[in-house]
Length: 428
Image 1 (cartoon, rainbow, N blue to C red):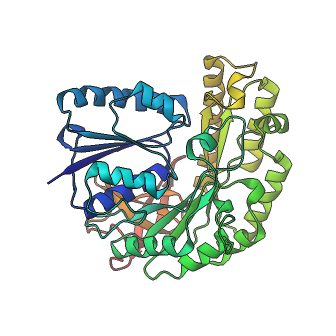
Image 2: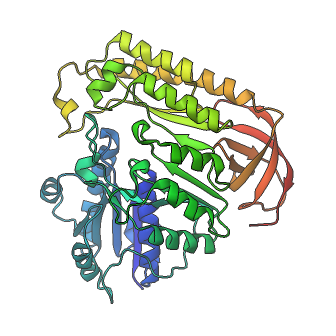
Image 3: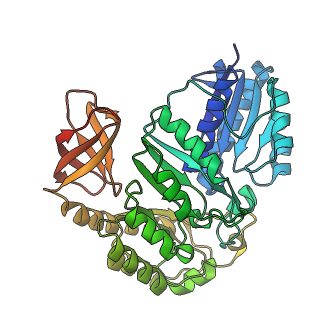
């Protein structure tokens, strides 16, 4: 019996893609191995968005070089965000196959030949036995046609490509049939889903379609782009019962000049007006954002504008990263690159302010009873998330994973809540 091992780093899209590959391989008779040394096939799902992630990929490939030397029959595949293929082929000639996002069926058929499968590698997995998670991601749209000055995604994942609604629904129904209760729809810019399809589709239409899938209790989606977030989507989030009041809306900077240099295509005022419309239509909205500090040329005053935007908008969660130059992107060669220590200082200032904001927002929830989807158990306590994506820890003697429960919030910290179970359903 052939065995496989998948190593994954990076975004939820990589996690979703690796889950689909695992399911397909199991459908072809492969078994999961806990370590590369136990596998006949090793797949690395890589990420090149930031240097730290790419460094981890290089380290893992170094380990696999030594594994290949002692186990030459082991087949190695590098997948996910790869970038310049010739570079990777020259640097790692021992890798047997490179599987990039969006490669066509003829290329994927070559992978099937490599794995000696009975039929060529298909986009949709056959029936598999692997247990899926209560919350799972589904990639609905790949690539990006925008060209932000800091971003390598257009060169690693290519132009925009949407999956057909019927294929997404089929995958959703299969996951729900195997125990999934929440789906996270994944894309680089999720609002651009369906624009390349004929007939044209929209994310709002897809949400309405998935809202009717029996047994699917929750739907989330990410990542959003402020300039593409239309009225139809606001209405879908506000009105569809299965769609959660939870949005990730990256701003990247709180200064208009920095946004212009980043080629983001909107202003801080535009963003704030959109947030006002969202909060008016969706009162319990959970809102997160992405920020980059230390972008080339960012002055202290411009950074202070970002801190001011944080204080005014008051996001629930801020994902902050120090600017990481990516070869081949415009900003990587610009003058005004900031020292690492200064980028770290700014990152720490954002984290400190966000801790205060998140704690203040979470304390408002103490005493309220909220709906929580229990996802699992850790350190003797159950954990799950509210509709607006707040992490809640609960204590209960019986197994409740997969259940929708009512929990009264008793304590609040900046990153999670403590609650007591008031009522719970039968297992979903």
